[in-house]
Amino acid sequence: MIQIRDILRFVRPIVRSTNAEFEIQGGREQPSPRSFSLARFCRVMFSVAVWLVAYAAPAVDHGAVTIIGVAKVDITPVYPIRLSGYASRKTESEGVAQHLFAKALALGSDKEGPVILLTVDNTCVPATVRDELAARLRRQVNLDPTHLTLCSSHTHSAPCLAGNLPTLFGAPLPSDQLARVEQYTRELIDALESVTLAALKDRRPGTLSWGQGQAGFAANRRTSGGPVDHDLPFLAVRDLKGNLRALLFNYACHCTTVGGVAFNQVCGDWAGYAQEYLERDHPGAIVLAAIGCGADANPQPLGKLELAQQHGRSIETAINELLSRSQTPLRGPPVCRSSAIAIPFDPLPTRLEWERKAAQTNYEGYYARVNLAKLDRGEVLMTRLPYWISTWTFGERQ
Image (tube, rainbow, N blue to C red):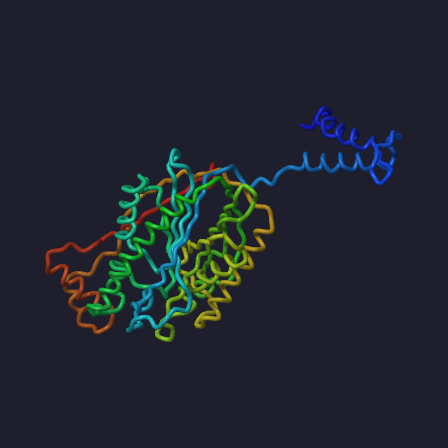
């Protein structure tokens, strides 16, 4: 609350300095004992009014102060490599349409136990990669593995990773191509470790806020006119001066605008372009992308690189419009909860059914032959899918 003594503390110096008018005498300014004029009184009161506005105006509340760090690293392969996402591709990549990145957001102090969110421009990061990364970070900085969340953009134009979709292409990869996939996987783990450590080192006081809009290019790819989630939530990270440091947005849609035999280049698809455009709009900020539950949604229209850029522009426009509005402050860092569940498969084929399928020359036939080989080695086929679920709770918000 503003009190009279505060106003007087500000006004008295002005009145004292203004009571002395100056006249030019002999080329020098000399004080004149003339009384305080009406004009000068008005100037004083104007100064007081400006001071009162500045003193009383409420600050924009972007959230409670939180220790926040952010970093990114380029993970674009520097050599040809098989790209994941489409079985129809039969050769290694043919150039780079857009660079790929891994980005890290670190929230909380060492005392609180920091939480890490990683986003990766890739089709899917297997559990083996996450487990290796979690073990390294446990050794390096004693990070609780349940405080590590990793999200893939699911672009279908990113390198294959060892241990992910091993039967995708309907045949074993040639040894030289497999060697490059394994090399890139090792390099990716190193990159994820380095970007996480960089984000932890970058931590400094800041604020968190969130908002939500919509984007309209996702369409159900299973059922025409079927359900689609068009929500576009985002998390904004600002420094204590209100400058934007980072953005995390989420839109439930496949990154499959480009791909297949006709497109065999490294590319982040619409999510990559949305990140690129928003970072260009907000110099110094790092933009992270997640795709939520988008398995049943494809971007529409699709088929051309220009359309991936168009969809990226849609996200850019929507987020920038949201940033122009007020957002809801968040009190961080969040409380993390994680749990592994097992999702049961349908009943597996019998051995006789596997043998019938194995006679086929398509992808299903190759998959059947792989499973028969496992049975011949005495291995037990998986009947459940291990599924890792993480939640971040900011106060009462998740």
